[in-house]
Every structure is written in structure tokens, then in C-alpha cells.
Length: 528
Image 1 (cartoon, rainbow, N blue to C red):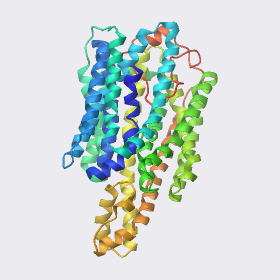
Image 2: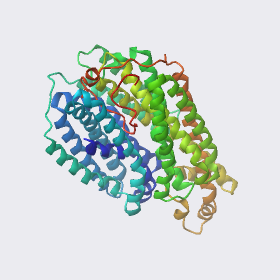
Image 3: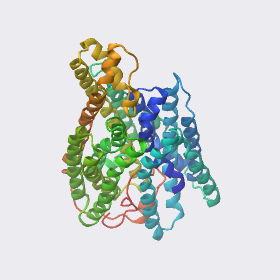
């Protein structure tokens, strides 16, 4: 199962490293590439609960095999994307089906692990499962940098041999299937997918449609309205897709809100930091991967520290500390982006990662321990959905912010070099969408005045991109500050222990853990 889910962890970060190369070769726009990254996260969030429910109804072994096949076929097709007008649509569709495969695979794999280990060994097994698979998130940037040096298509093809090994091991393991004779909540599955998709579409397209557009607000408000309908429906149906009654617990609600705002910064960080490194710092994909490792270094150390705080004093101190450290780290990091020096930024990148590390595992584990009347699988299914939906929202909002800010900066740069306002605005929109690695390697050709001005302005445009990214990182600092305000509302104290049997009960029911979590997120025990 660890081999099977390793693909889903790595895919959360590996594509971010290759983004500039994909944009350059296929001629995609910057906002289009954000959709390629976001399609995976959005599908994972929208279908995660469905995957856990299908594992209940069909048996976890069958769903593991199905999820692996969907994921690997989608990965292979992503790597085979043709050049031309259909490239963007092709990538978005098959990245979304990749997310669907991951949503089927992960909760079913967790259910298998819970089912095959006896109670006295289950906690240790889950700690190993979460610890090693979570650590694979850090491999994504390194592997992506190495593979992109050969061809960016290999970041998708690398999943094929892993999937073959996973399927062989699944067959050799002779896993028994346990099924439940219950009804699938198809209406709930459709409502949550439509609501999330519409709302993210509105945020993502705001850069193109404008914030004053009826279409923008129609999608945002319409999507949120559908999610409200989904919540009301789930509270009334006999076999809900998601058990929303757990939100009656104040501590669980606070944990979920803190996770939401922390994740709006964490996953989008890898996309924006990677593109910044390759555009503003002229870094290679391998160098950009090393740049991101600063974040993981802080994250890994703080995750273990946060787990100890949770055990001794409960979640509230860890959440408050993490939110403050993260907000300060992102704020200071934003101020250093315009120095255009990778070496000078590492302390702030590590500090930002540490802030997230203090928050994620303690909040997730505390949420499990606080929800005494719900199964482990139901609670982690909810937190996983919250996390991936938040990541999708964050990528969409920050992408829109980056496009607007970059356009304004480029207009100022071109006007200062003698271009008319109309020409500067027209060109700036093209520049804002053309996110490619090392802009000096893509200088405009020709002897006309516009091409000459653009060539002369490349160094300034690199700085414009850094200044635009400052607003994104300030936004991430603001997200952590908002998380801190909610962390203050946490009731505190050490959560009551859950018995291993209660925690394991129904683990396949929307079950799953958070990709990228540390080993601190494990089978609940006394004190977390």
C-alpha cells in the first residue's frame, strides 16, 4: 500500500518544478498551467469522500486496484500530451482523472493497512505508513528536477513502473475484501464536486474575466451555494457521503479552519516558489528543487516538535506557535524576494516551512481525537477534503493576484522605456501569461522598436516578476495570520484518548491521511 500511494504523494509537488518547461514547450499560458496543477488537487478534494465510500461498498482491495489503474493510465496520457491547440485541455482532463485515481486509491489503501494489522500493532504500522509516505512529498521536487533535465514528460511516466510494482505486490499480498451493504450517496458526490469546481473556477478565472465580471461572481457565489445545499442534504440523508455532525465539536471546527488557511499557503507555495526561482533567479529545475528543500527542512523539524507539544500540552500551543512562525516566515521571505539571491532566502524559507510543520500534524491528529463519535476514516476524510479544497482555492486566488500585480509592474516598466500606454498594457498581458524558465533565453527576436525595448527590459521584467511574487507571499503570511486568529478560539487541553478499536472502526469510510503529513499524524493514542 505504501508503494501504491507513493505516486499520489510525489505528484503533489513534482509538477511544480516542471511547470516552466511545460509552458515553454507547449506554449501554454501561466493561468493555464495553474489549471494543470489545480485540476489534480481539485479532483482529489472533490472525490476523496467518494473513494472512501466505494472502498466500503466494493471492498478496499478492488478500489486500490481500480484507483492505481486510473492513476497510472492518466499519468501515461499526461506524458503523451500532443503539441498544438488541444494540449491544455488534454493536460487538464488527465490531471483531473489522476486526482480521481488518487482519491480512490488513498482511503482504500489506508483501510487495507488498518484491516490487516491487529489492534496492538496497528498504531506502529500507521505511524510507519504516514511517516514514510509523507516523507515522499520532499522527493517530488528533487525527482522532478532530475527528470525535467531529460524531458518534463518523464515526471508523468515515472509513475508507470511504480504502479506495476504496486499492482504485483497487491496481488501477492492476497488481501481479503470486506464490503458493506449500504447505499452510495450519489447526489452528495455530485453536489460536492460541482460546488468545489464552480467556486474554484471563479477564483481562477478572475484574472482573465475581472473581479467586476458577472461570470466571476456567478461561479464563486453559485459554487458556494451548491456547497451549502450539499451540507444541508448530508445532514438529512441516512447514509451521508460526509458525516458533518463532527463540526458540532468546537475544537474540531477550529482544527479544520486552521488547516484550511494553512493549506491555502502550503501547497501553492511549491508552484509559485518554483516558478519564481526559474524566472527571477534564472535557476535550473534542479536548482529550483534544492531551493524548495529549505522549506521541507523546516517543515520536517517542526513536525516532530509539534507532535511533542501535542502530546504534552495539547494542540492549542502548537497551532498558535505554528501560525505565528509561519506568518513571520512568509512575511520576511517576501521581503527578500527582490534581492534575487537564493542564498539569502534560505532562513526565511525554512521558517515558513517550520510554521506549516507546527500546524498540520497536530491539527489533524487533534481533530481525530476530538471527534469521539465518528470513525477515524470519517474524520480524516473530512480533513483531507478541507486541505485539498483549500489548496485549490489558494492556488487560484494567488495566481490571480500574481497576474494582476505582474501586469501592473510590467506596464510601469515599459512606459518608463518610452512605449505608449496602450502598447504597454497589451504587451504586459502577454508577458504576465508567458511564465517560462530563464527569461533571458527567450528574448524577443527582430529589429523593431518593440522587440528592442523588450530585450532591453528583460532584467527589469525579472525584477517585476519578483515584486509581483512578493504580494503572493504576503498573501500567504496573511493566510497564516488568519489561521492564528482561529487558533485562539481553540478550547485547549489534551484531547481525550480514543481506543484503537474506535479509531479503526470504519476506517475505509472516507478514510485517509493527508499527503505530505509527518509521522506525527498516526493512530491516536493518549495525548494525541
